[in-house]
Length: 618
Image 1 (cartoon, rainbow, N blue to C red):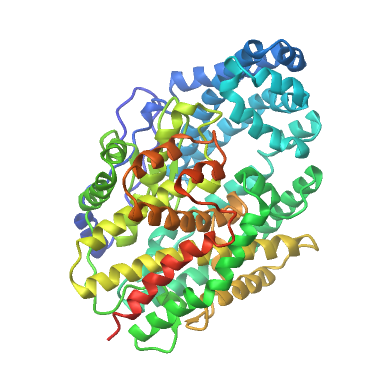
Image 2 (tube, helix red, strand yellow; image 1 turned 90 degrees about the vertical axis):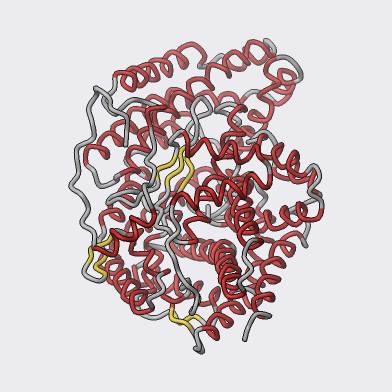
């Protein structure tokens, strides 16, 4: 599906064997798009990529030679002199980001391919080495006296970068001496980066034998949503067997990365295990603590209550863990073709604002989406912003399930957000995680509400509401339980290395508390922590999903009450990128996350849906 080029092509791979049922399901789904990465570079061996890589290395060296040790002098010289250097730094960051984004996207297409893995690893090494020449810039900038920086920011061209510089200075108390920062930076390739890559390649290489097929992680997990209960059980047991066989590897990765984080946090002076994440998210610890407390207190009213209801629908006292996300009984399950999924999401977006649908449509028309399930492909889904001089790309593993349609809506929400924030430039386009999930969850909600409004059949309506409640429980309750698991794990790791069984026991304790008595967590489930990539790639990221879901529930409530002018305010929020703190961006909607009652607004929406489902019993 990639355009023909004269440069080195990726090695051909043998076709993946598929059963007749799998082939029939694929025929129902239709032809799925594969992304065109030539907007970044023509190919891995292309002259343009090699030239840009060499140019980036040269630019980093030249930048350091020109400006190291001079920033205080430049700042005292006024706005224009320092602004010129910031502009040059931003341009280099954009080039570095383009190169690394391309290598990362190539690698995610097949993490088991040795050629791609080498390309990714070599690129990462060279860019890490090159960017070490840039480390001085932010460190030295933060050492300039506040009064001098404030004077330079008062007017002139540097004022444009005020949000970035003020944001940068929040890191000042935790930055180390330049040589130590350089050591941390350069060793990340053989440290955290290497362990992340080991996790990715190990997980992508696992195969789970289900009904005679050797399946990768994504199609194996997908079986847990099948309408065949026996198949769900077989899939759950197969997952547990393979996770258990690889438990020591995943425990070693987890122990090592947790210790690595503890060392970094200790050197930087962070008090709590999650404080570095809170700083990166630009959110106060007490706000996150309030969210966690509100959700934990609501477990009985949300997950416990819903799963008890679902168990009654299945005629049981409790559900086995492989039935937690099972489709409802006596509801027809069908494969949703890709074209229908596309139209569903675009229609929902257009119903909110044509501008939103126009941006999302470009992802389909210009081949910014990679949707097929392939052996070795990165599991899950993501929207990668790349750099402002290019455009985002979306990765999916589309299999025609209703949740896949919601995932498409979710990732396109990210994509729209990233496109709208791009004009802020490489330094200010990135959005803190406090708001990074806003557009994605809002896109899901728009899609769900549109589908629900056009569904009159009571049984189908109940199935849709139940699926949405399950998604919200997975986003809010499950992610807060993940956060609790991480906290316990990282705190215990400070006392010494954890055995695989100790990690499993911690996992079971938080899962039992969050899911409640109506879900039986049988043998095998104790290993399911192993496949969650967020624990490896971005510790404590998970609460951002709950933050975003509760925030969007509140935001959507504002939209339902007063639609006039809402789209304009919403697009202003997305277009701000990282130029404003979350509190300032929420103020036009009358929302304040620091208000003790704020989180109850979002949780009440989930409760209301569960109550509606209870009213449909019988």
